[in-house]
Image 1 (cartoon, rainbow, N blue to C red):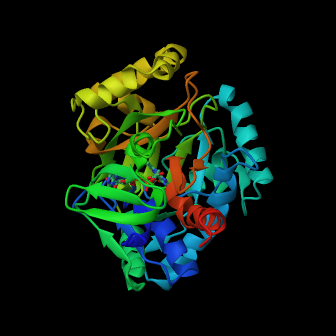
Image 2 (image 1 turned 30 degrees about the vertical axis):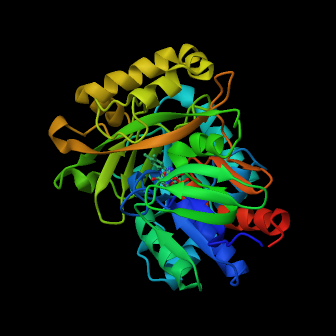
Length: 405
Ligand SMILES: Cc1cc2nc3c(=O)[nH]c(=O)nc-3n(C[C@H](O)[C@H](O)[C@H](O)COP(=O)(O)OP(=O)(O)OC[C@H]3O[C@@H](n4cnc5c(N)ncnc54)[C@H](O)[C@@H]3O)c2cc1C
């Protein structure tokens, strides 16, 4: 007698990556039953619901990397998806601005990278064009990226959830925290806080918890999630006119983050930030949030210390900005010199799941691995929200081939 199977596939994590993956598999295989299990009361409760809402162009990523390929493809598909399902978005474009001569070489490097990645319409601009596009911004040179846009990724996630549940037998179950995976020869018993489900295949899209879910599935993932909190400020109503769309500094290639930038969001709010500080809690959004297990897991890992030792100077600067708004403001004034202390107020925070390897190297590219009956998304940092539909295609391809769907 065979075991009764509740769902052919269980996706763990109702963020945009899990939902896009389940959606693409459901489209490709309408006859199978899929469940998405999300531990929070709502989907998109963590990275997906705390991000900047930027539809990234794909300009920065190493040519040929999974990030570069899926970002460009995913961006185009995301825009079509938003159009089709009437999700508000805007292709407002962005500028990357150098404010000092020493940044020019990196700006040039970013431009060539964008050309290699075939990003449509990018152009080099000078100080006058910067002023024409963003009248309050000061810069000596820049790049205009016309295909960058803005959207609310929570809305995209909600629509994906709705579409998944249109498939016969599919479910998106919130408040279902996966506690344990009991492995049997031909099926897995997925034990949650509510009930247990039997499934043939697991897809781990647990974001900030992805390394733990991989371990629960009997895997040694060879990396650890080190959480980095990013605090944002917002421009006040009066100061909002100082930013028309998106203004970014030239990124430092040695760090995985893009630097403090200005983002007009789809709801009209203008965010500025973030900094990037080690977070003592994986899903903690307050400056003093602490969780013993999360801190122990990160700080008992050799890779974390190796990374800290390599980047301690940068880390100290980021901490200073986290606790001192004057320092934060100074950073912002590099791009908009007329910004004053009463133009900004504290905004929200987000925590990034940064996968770190054992030598202290932040893992840059997406890391998606297959085991016998499971797929683990171990690293899906920015631009994974932009790229989500293309990541979903990729996961559907792997699932189709190896799970023999
Ligand atoms: C501050 C910030 C700004 C960003 N800005 C952008 C941007 O502008 N554009 C862009 O493209 N990308 C951006 N990103 C990146 C993007 O948000 C993420 O790459 C993307 O949301 C990752 O999605 P995910 O589904 O992998 O993770 P998440 O959204 O974190 O989802 C994982 C889900 O798994 C659930 N889960 C975990 N463990 C369990 C369990 N045991 N049982 C059940 N459920 C579980 C969690 O509750 C969570 O909902 C940003 C990220 C951050 C943090």
